[in-house]
Length: 304
Image (cartoon, rainbow, N blue to C red; front, side, top):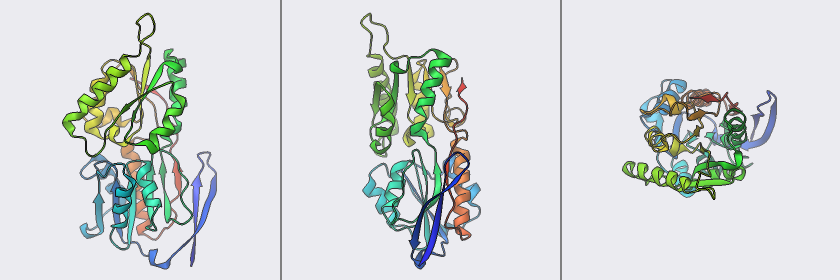
């Protein structure tokens, strides 16, 4: 049995031993990549940059199973159906990583929140965006830079993604759900966001003034998918919004409103992070079984 040392980047620059695992020799000799994604991935800017990092690979050795949604059983089935000698790349949020972790298939992951891999899984590293823990910094910036009351700031979250959103809601006095997953038609998204914002507007003080001063958008994968991101921004109008990734202003066709929005999240954009994930997958194809568990640092708030 071969011992594998997995190390974690604590974010402070120190490398700590995450855990030691025993891996069957059958897991050695990875030659294929299988991307398992919660959201659409094929032919997106995210896939394009992932492939830049991955480098040349033949079609027979590259597989994508995407737009699966948040159902852990469906995601786990997709992982288990990966071709032999594949590295699974779990993307689109915490659910994909949790599903992969419940198998013996070797995998790396891109997650919005940290998690502790099982000692019986074959976790070979990845990237955590730390997004679920960044809300305190977003609330701090809103208060000291814009005078927004944290108690009057609302989280807009995806109720289809409870493994992630339940971690997000703890800091908020107000939270508003939108339910979007792989079954949601593109034509329905505008109406869903519009209804959510109307519900937020319905919170009023006794004098009839708005009770909500600002809204923070979750780092949910479907919210970030370019077409749905455009809808979110459009329906937000001139309400004061905080968006979690720089991609909200660089991807898609609609940019956040000037004077009433802030970009505040990981220092790197998602497209940059997907390129980095592709480099980790490339390292596995070259024989690595420990690509590191990187924590993306918080970037500066960018007021639009």
